[in-house]
Each structure stands twice: as C-alpha cells, then as structure tokens.
Image (cartoon, rainbow, N blue to C red):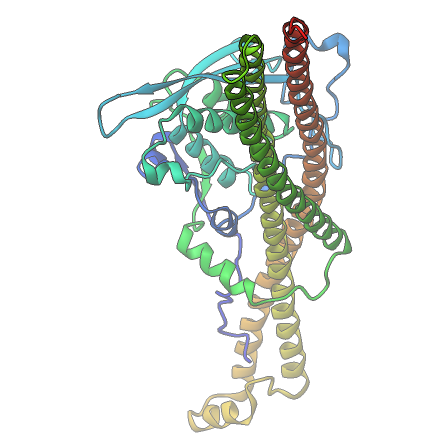
Length: 478
C-alpha cells in the first residue's frame, strides 16, 4: 500500500470548524419521540475540550455552612477531581391538557427549580414545558456533552399511544413521574446541571425565542458519522483497557440483576392482584351469607364491606408499586444502556487512534524502504514507468520522499491529537462511571424507602380496618 496519495478518509479525524445554532433551529427536527439511544450516541465523532467537563472545579466550598449562598459554576479547573453536584431540587407537577379538542393537543407540565447556582436569575424559578421540549433538551445535551452519560427520556412507544389514551390520567401521571426522574438525574450530574442549555430549559419563559447559541462541530451529521461508527464497528481494539472491561462487566451484572428483579416483581404483582380479587369474592360471600342468617345480617354485611375496603387497599398499593417501583427499574435499565453506549463511543476513539498509528507506522516503513533501496512500495513497475517516461530517478525519489514527509508530518499531528482525545475521553468515562454509581446509590435508596413506605401505609390501613370491625363483630349475640 502506498501512503503518498492515501487521504485516510476511513479514519474519523477531528477537522471540523465550529458553526452555531439557535434552539429554534432544532425545533423542525424534533417530534415527540426521543431519538434512539444507540443512534444518539453513535453519531458523535468530533470531540473537543468543551465536552470533557465532568472533571469538575475543585476550589468550591461544599460544606453545609455555604448551602444558603448562591454558588458559582465557573471556578478553576483541576483534572482528575469529581466535585459533587450543587444542591438543586426540581419538581414536575400540575399536568395540563392544552389546545384541547384539536389535533395539536398536548400535555404541559409545571416545573419548579430551587438551586444555589448563581447562574440562575433567582433561587426559585418555574416554567411550563411539554414533552417535545424535553426531547429538545435531551438532543442538545447528547450532542454537546458526548463524553457524558445523558440519562434517557421515557419511551414514547407505549400502548397508550396506539389506543389513543395518552391523555388518560394514569398515563399522564406515569410520564410526569418519569420526567421528574429524568430532570433529577440531570440535577445530580455535576456537569450537566451546570450546562447553559439546562438552565435555559428550567428558567426561560421564552423557550422557543431564546437566542442561545450552541457550538456544533461541522461534519457530525447523522449519516456521515453513522458511517464512521459502522466502519469502526467492524474494527476491534487491539489493546483493551482493563478499566473499561471491568466497567462493562459491572454494568452487565447490574442489568442482569435488574432484569431478575423485574421478572420476580411481575410475579409479586400478579399474586397481589389475585389476592385482591380473592378478597373481594370473599367479602361478597360473607355479605351474601348474612342474608340467610337472621339477627347477624348487619354485622356480616359490615364485615363484607371491610373486606372490600381491604381489597381496595391492596389495589392501591399494587398500582402505586407498579407505577413507581417497577417503572423505575425499567428506566434504570435504559440508563445502564446509555452507559454502555458511551463506553462504545470511547472504544471508537481508541480505534481511531490505533488506526491512525498504523497508518503512521506504515508511512515510516515506506520512507525507510525508499531511502534504503530507492524503491519503497512503488517497486519495479513504478521505476519502469518512470524510465519509459524518461523521468529522472533521483528526482522521482526526491518527490516521493517529499510527499511521504508531508504525510508523515500530517499523521504525526493527527496521531497526537487522536491520542489526546482518546485519553481525555477515557479519563472522562472513569469519572462518569463514578457519577453513575453515585446516582444509582441515591435512586436505590429512595426507591426502596418509597417501596417500604407503601407497605407500611397499606398495613396501617389494614390494621385500622380490622380494628374497626372488631366491636361490630363482638355485638353478635350468641
């Protein structure tokens, strides 16, 4: 292979120039469906320093005595330090159906944010957003922070969209809770919570007209970079990094455990639903028995009503567990998938570096051969052509060496740049995994506490119901 005329187009080089977009420029490209998590991650190949920002500032005081003051997100940068996210509380409430009666009807949600970040106009701000706005936010963060694990949005492809019940109260409440968890994950991320686009989303009252410019690398179009991703999909890393093998294995185990929990919980929910039905049937049978027994009809009717109320409590607990706990398990499975996609993108950067290094090594070998015997990879055929064309052999050799030197210089710069990107990306992924682990711990704690509270509430209701029926049953005369 000759390196004199190879343009190395098969390697994703970082040679784009910056262009700028407004948020409204993206609106025509956004519908109410979040992009494929695989596609969103595989189409980003141009990386610059602005994307390596999880290595957070280290000069900020995070002690409790500063929690009430407004804090800056722009302190000095120190590598290899992950600083916890600033205190930020976000609530998604009051869903409202807008443009009711039209084809353009949608649900908007009231979002309230409380934070100490000084980049916000006030410590407490509120806005209304629709699902399409969340998609726009997700797309922007995924593009601007390629090395960050952007949490997934709730899936649009649900049965409610097919049956037309996407405005039903149950679906709206599930989506509201999922959107709140999405924003909470962003708020817990030390980099994403400080992004300008996230701030605008949370506080701007003129979202569509906001003149906020985002830097976008040219050449990161979907089809161009999808081609790069598909090309590298057939290339394997020659020197795998044990750190990321361990991270991937850890994520695989987390997914496996979550899938087991999901499967078992389906069984639990089915049992609870069966018990609910059995209690209702049991209560009805007792009430019917009272119609045949003189003197205790009232007491038996009351017992049947108590059993019916107990079955209602079973249903409320089951519904809330399915809506809250089970949905959280599914969402965290999607979150794990996002981590694995970022790992794939890191692998792609290493493959880019390794391929460029191979090109450089090949060019150096060709130069050495050319200087040693005057032939290089051109061989006898090229020399014969030069002879036929009366080309001076020394001049032809000199020209080939000049071309090779130019290519080698170019490749050396690209190898150095690619190595720098690959190393930075790797460092960032290590920090992202720490952030993911921290968010996982918080959510696991919160979800299990909520699960426990639901059961305590259920058993308290049951205890109260059965205690209330005791005096009524004791009035039965024997």
